[in-house]
Amino acid sequence: MKKEAPKPQLFHEARHGKIYLGDSLDVMASMKPESVDLVMTSPPFGLVRKKEYGNADSHEYLEWFKPFAEQFNRVLKDSGSLVIDIGGAWIPGQPTRSLYHFKLLIMLCEEFGFHLAQEFYWWSPSKLPTPAEWVTVRRIRVKDAINTVWWLSKTPWPKASNRRVLQPYSPSMKHLLAKGYKAQKRPSGHDISEKFAIDNGAAIPPNLIALPNTESNGFYHRYCQEHGIKAHPARYPAELPEYFIRMCTDEGDTVLDPFGGSCVTGEVSERLKRKWVCAELSEEYLEGALGRFTTGNVEYIAARASIAAKLDDEANYYKLPRPGILWNGSHGDTLAEDGGKKRVIKRAELTKGTASSRGGSSDVEPLPVAAAGR
Image 1 (cartoon, helix red, strand yellow):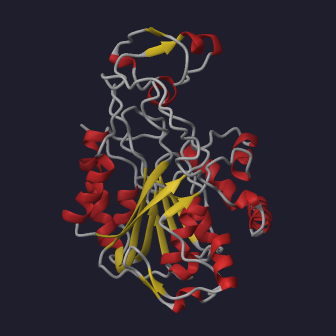
Image 2 (tube, rainbow, N blue to C red):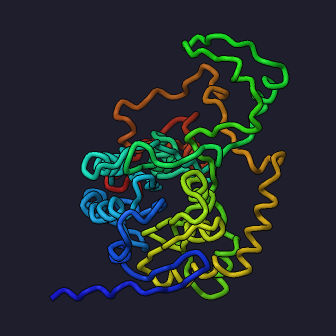
Image 3 (cartoon, rainbow, N blue to C red):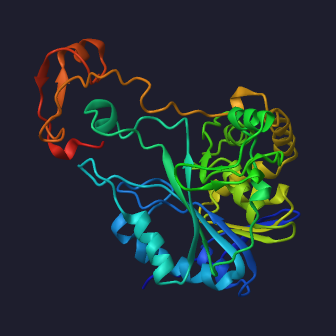
């Protein structure tokens, strides 16, 4: 006989919100219908290898997610939003991608009636060049540096304002505003009016969010080390949930994170004076989450925010080079007809200990396909 899972327990209560230890499906089942303004979460990804924080196989992911989708639909207000940060996965043994996160999006819209308000892409400039086999060894793919962030809603009209998340003007826009702009039709057919040259103080952001995920010496991490607690291995930076909490909710609104982890969403919601609920199955992760609600962490965040507020600080800007700045007309080696299926290592690379894609004669070293992607 299958043992019944324990009911969720109140683990911690802050001024504006609560943390529950237990199954979030049970937590949501106890909530009133249409009582939540924003579900902001990063669920366990449908990865091809099991992670310590638990995840469903990619081919089982949709069935696993359905009960959560039902509860999201039930507890969300018609004016509310569902924001899901979800990373992709590689198919085992081959340099091709799983479609599970796209299938999830389609399922949420076609089976559960959600609307895709907008897709976002979280670009982490600090991402390592992985998977190494395809990216740094065989050199047949580029590094995977984005997560998709699906912004969904129960109706086509969730409450939101991009005025809450404006960004500084670019140098070229500042120059245009200073020199003036002549209204004209662009080659694309867009008719740019004189209103384009009005200085509104800040720019409307794109749906690409540039945020590194490199904080390994922050207060949360130090708190876990000092208390002998294992830090959650898959945290998103606080600025990511803050973006959507600011854009889609007002003070006093309710934010829910059903996959709380280290309760980043709860920490941000508390600071922004939103009511909030986080649920998490791992007691150890919640022991570490307590550090987010200490006086020390509040002071740390305030100090960090004062530094980040400097508009002229280069550390607050992330740049991507134009694709062609290193293109010099030479393509290097002829492309492999087998698409890189046969692993090739160059003698020069064996000497250097790298996997360069240019120069030198080559030795062919076939590897079993099953070794790929590890």
